[in-house]
Image 1 (cartoon, one colour):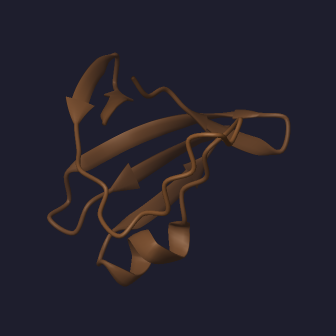
Image 2: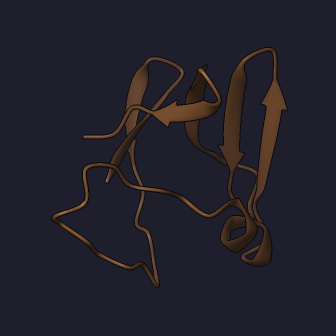
Image 3: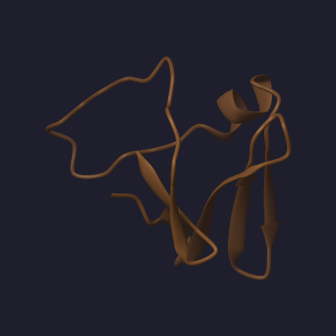
Length: 72
């Protein structure tokens, strides 16, 4: 998938996912990211997903009570 990071799209591969094409929305597990050595940083209405090597994986904007990833 291509995730928007700082205005650009970065390709990342998700592993061990549950694929449900009929679902209207998709969810990403922060606990799975944590288990893989990554982290999620929440600050001022934004979330930055960081990989185990410290690279930015994605950024998400807070919309209501959820954080929306820009993915294509």
